[in-house]
Image 1: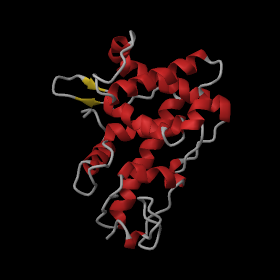
Image 2: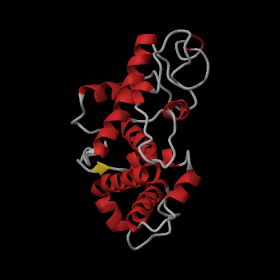
Image 3: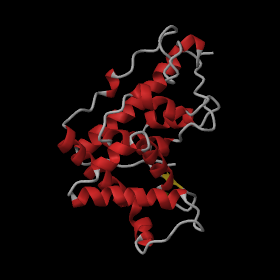
Image 4: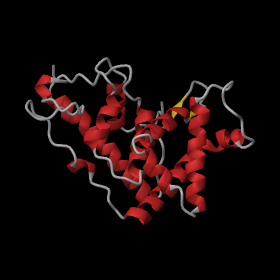
Length: 221
C-alpha cells in the first residue's frame, strides 16, 4: 500500500483489512477508485445505494455506534477529499505498491469499474458525443479494466496495450479529471456534500451498511 497515507486513511485502511469486514469488502485502493468513479459518474448516486457495495454481502461488524460513525465519516471524508482534488486538478489515486516498488494500478481500476457498473447505460450515453478527449478517457480506462480483469490467454491483445499499461499510473488521474470536467459541463455541479449525505449512527438509526435495518439489528449485532 501507499506508504504516504494520512493518519485518517491509515485508520480506514486498518479497518478494511481487519476481521470486522468480510472477504468481499473493498481494499483502500479499490475504494479510492470506486469513489472516484462515483464522483465522475454522469448520474448522481447516493450513499444509501453505493455503501453496501463497499462492504460486500456480509457487511461490516462495528463494535459500537462510535466506531460505526467514525468509519462512515472516514469514507465520506475521503469522498470529499477526492472532490476537492478534482476541483483543483490535483487528484492523486491511491495505488498499491508491491515489494519491488512497482505501482499496482489494477486494484484501483477494479474499484473504478464497479462504480461504472452501477450506471452502465449512463456511461454509454456519456461517451457517445463528439468530445474526443472524453471518448479517449473512457476508452483508456475501460481497456485498462479489461487488461486487469481478463486472463492473458483470453484477452484479445491490442497494439496499444503495452503502452497503456506503462503509462497507466500517470494516465489514470488525467483521464479522471477529463471525466470530471465533462460531467460538470454536461450536468452542472450536482455533487452533494458527502458530510451531509449520511446521518449520525444511533442504535435505532438505519445501519450504515445500507441494509435498511436498524443499526442495533444489523452490524452492531
